[in-house]
Length: 117
Length: 308
Ligand SMILES: [Zn+2]
Image (tube, rainbow over all chains, first blue to last red; front, side):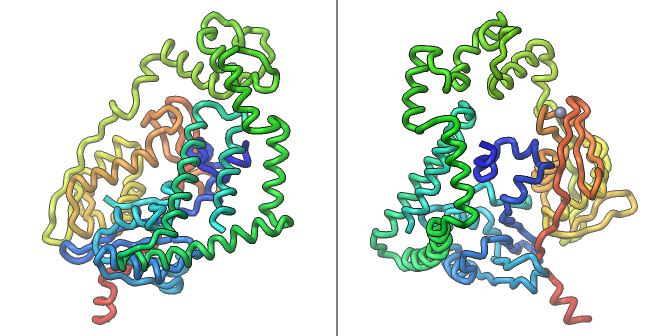
């Protein structure tokens, strides 16, 4: 059972955090928002698994969300991996895209952390 | 290809249904089944011809992504010497130890639910329904000289029953009664927000201003400073509601005790750079992640580079 718990969601993860076991398996995807000048904002998505083609994701996402965006390379993000950067507050939409099983990447909800207000 | 992937998932959910798991955990396995179901739907959607450009694009992309994914999965399946294979064999061993077959077990369990205590193998899983009424009388599993190990689940419910009986205060005081003053937000000029009562709120939460500030900045993706009156000046325009939301997540993550929900906790820097939250109400201790800013886009840096 303990082996299973490591793989699936561990209901006691919060209490057992100091064991470090959950952290190894849970590499979070961070969705953040940043304010630019005025009412403009930026959405950054950090930690999408490298098995996905980030460029293609960006291409698709730009079309659906009708927004522009770029990929920040690993060197540009100072070792934080490739980051997808979108214009505007796309946090909810990108989360939906990442988790949608039919039209998105079908990732687990629990691996995604949405930051910001 | 997809099928093999699914198989893996179902296998996982099956093993998760071995006896030691009780009712609460079944919820999790249920979600897994949903996973499988929707995965199957996704597979079905593959074959359905799409009429929209958007969709075709998506499919292309998805196919590519899935291919890579499957490549890994298939590799795992084909190479029994891999790490995964070891994992699987371990799982199987586990399974065998407790039950011979899942279906068998399900049937047994059903039978047990109707007939009451019968088999020896599945008895610990079935004692939930026996245990319920007997706890207070001290019979069945709760007998004083009972040697059978009590499951986590009944023990937990016992704990909460006792807690609500002997200490109703404690059981009911959750986050609901915990109030912090609402953040006071003022606009400074056009581009800055002043968070005026940060010291007061920090005092109420028993957290250092630095820690709360770091969290606010990380979450809001901005920076700022403290002014002469110890008010926090945040770059960017933020409404009170937004600051409040961030404070709320801060409280969940760094203030309340996950065990008893009490906000009466202390944050301390433990050994090797880890931060710990120690609860003053129940004494539980948990580690919390250090505040990470993560990636932050270079907003306005270009302007600086131009001038500099
Ligand atoms: Zn506590």
